[in-house]
Amino acid sequence: MVDVCMVSVAKGRQQKIEHDECRHSGDISCVQPSYKQVEDFLLQADNLCIKRKQRFTDLRKQVLSLICRSEQPLGAYALLDLMKDAGRSAAPPTVYRALDFLQEQGFVHRLASNNTYLACAHPQQQHEAVFLVCKQCGATQELHTDGIYKAVESRAKKVSFKVEHASVEVVGLCAHCRAA
Amino acid sequence: MVDVCMVSVAKGRQQKIEHDECRHSGDISCVQPSYKQVEDFLLQADNLCIKRKQRFTDLRKQVLSLICRSEQPLGAYALLDLMKDAGRSAAPPTVYRALDFLQEQGFVHRLASNNTYLACAHPQQQHEAVFLVCKQCGATQELHTDGIYKAVESRAKKVSFKVEHASVEVVGLCAHCRAA
DNA sequence: ATATATAATGTTACATTATAACATTACATT
DNA sequence: AATGTAATGTTATAATGTAACATTATATAT
Ligand SMILES: [Zn+2]
Ligand SMILES: [Zn+2]
Ligand SMILES: [Zn+2]
Ligand SMILES: [Zn+2]
Image 1 (tube, each protein chain N blue to C red):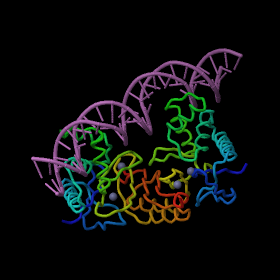
Image 2 (cartoon, rainbow over the protein chains, first blue to last red; image 1 turned 60 degrees about the horizontal axis):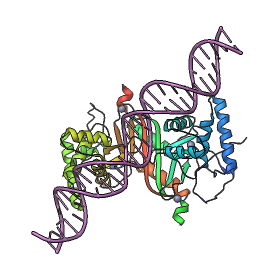
Image 3 (cartoon, chains in turn cyan, green, red, orange; image 1 turned 90 degrees about the vertical axis):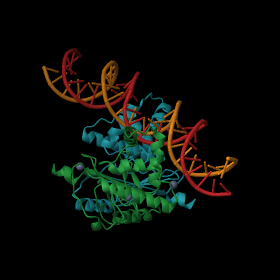
Image 4 (tube, helix red, strand yellow; image 1 turned 180 degrees about the horizontal axis):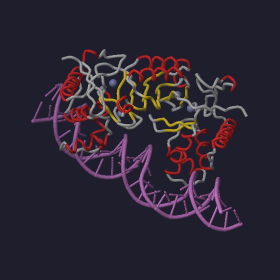
């Protein structure tokens, strides 16, 4: 199976890009979460968990699936509601624990600027990312661009600060909403 | 009066840098919130408010003063407690409104990664900033570095995303805590 | 297979962060 | 002084996140 990458995009847009156009680093993530892609993505997560000797339980799979299928990043309580809609009784700790696991495995990211979670565009590799959050439609793109982190590292080094994690979240207008 | 700049630094460190070493852009903010500096900072805020025809009320002044005097960025409820200690009865909306005002005026920044507020190092000018948050001691430095934002802008442009605000928060270990 | 330990989930209660709505007070302008 | 507006006070509640402990599922060892 080829690696699958994922990105949250705005409703209605198609903007399909063939998978093999994605270079898996240094550029924007590539594809829309169609149903087939979600299946592939979950399968890939499953394989990664096997490799890492982690348990990809029903609960975790369901949470990841809901996040993948969403057009926008989801809050924890939005996820809870979706889970209830899907017939699973769930309380906050349940979803937060699942989210913790998914983040540890690098399958989802959390956006601090709006307390939401979205599927990672490239779970195959460890990476830092830049998120472009549309304030209009909420759609969020994950960019992988080493340049920004190199710049952060360089500046931090000057003040002897040891970087562990950098969160870069950019709010603005996506191409689609600019046009409209 | 000379412009005053401010930075939140770790307890106990002195690391004084003369004000005229600070170039007010492109580099780390410069000085420690000593009492004299806080006074100057508040006076400067006062002047900016007059220039902008904004009201720098007692409440707003008190909140800004507490933030300035703190070694670390403060949460809204920590501020509330400090205000109560200082004899003012206050409820959450009071402090949140004051914080909103101070942010609008560019006197404080909010850190999304830990829901705290800190005095802006350079309120004289509009700017984007990078925050280095020490996970050990909580001390937070504000860096002004155009390079990172240029990189963000450039990458965003490639996907036709219109940047409005970029939040860059870096978690790691400060020089002081690395040594210890 | 059964016992045992560990990991995951369920459940309840609560902590923390933030805001809505409306009353009151202070200030500015006439 | 009368009036309108901005700021603050006050109450209640929304939204986000976690602690603690019970239960269930899974893995490992005997
Ligand atoms: Zn990612
Ligand atoms: Zn948009
Ligand atoms: Zn600043
Ligand atoms: Zn430190």
